[in-house]
Image: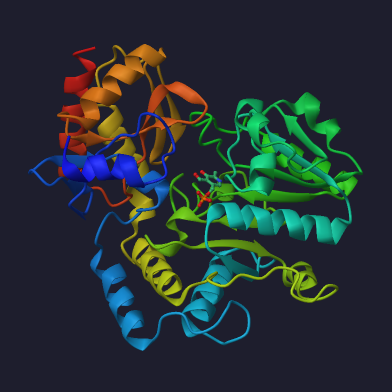
Length: 395
Ligand code: PLP
């Protein structure tokens, strides 16, 4: 094992007993390069972060320009910092008119924390509803919404008043009631293994929330910025949430999260008590500058127009066996190999010698991800299909 890997295992806090241990020396476009000449096609994009691939020139230009101007100058909320203002204004322009106030934080989990607090503050209710097999983050509040008791048990007590529903079960919607502050839901359940909402489900959820006065919160931390083929995941259903949570690709590769809400709602966090939600690094000027550059490049390069074609090009080139099912949309798919043993073997081969970086899902250990950068080229897609097929045919 290389010296760096040994030190990684010794000195970095670990997340699992079996990390991928892919060593990265550099990255460009949809390729990752190891220290000994290994080259991988990136099919996971840093878990939906690197939508423009690695080292996009516009993102790097914005990063350097902002670094020359200033880095951190003040905690979030007091100074007028142009990268924050420009990104928030652009997001508001691209979102439905009600979603016009952006609160910047550092991560997806923090966006969820902010949304939970805002919903409780506004409704004065204790209840939080989320979905089975949902992942919303690892902080205490976000973990309280996690859709699987196995991940929560060791950390209890968590937030009280939480309730889980089965995604797509219309019959359970009546469990959302007058004690519910908010319902937190994804427009596609990512970590469940790319589960799409059933036709009419998000509309029914919206209707039920309106009926009982609960807020509807969409976690688009993985799906926003084109993953589903549209800029926002909610565009597919036409359902507009009360609060939208963003993260991952929002910062163009730098850490950034946000929750977005109507201004009259958001303003409640600023009084009674004053400083109801504060953050030191939220909306870091570097992250906002790279986030805006990434967003403009995504739109300017018209990447959304080509997403479905790219997905088909790759998926159609795969062998039928041993794949049991392919789920998802846009450039977010779960390729199901039918068993965790098959997936485990495939992952070994992909990441070590197969020239592919991918990952599995938190609640689906039969499937691997096809979620590459949105600007992956046809040449990279063809090579990825060739490499993935070579591994699958060995299983
Ligand atoms: N929500 C979803 C849907 C996610 O996929 C994630 C992270 O994977 C989060 C929230 C938490 O984001 P972060 O890891 O930035 O805290």
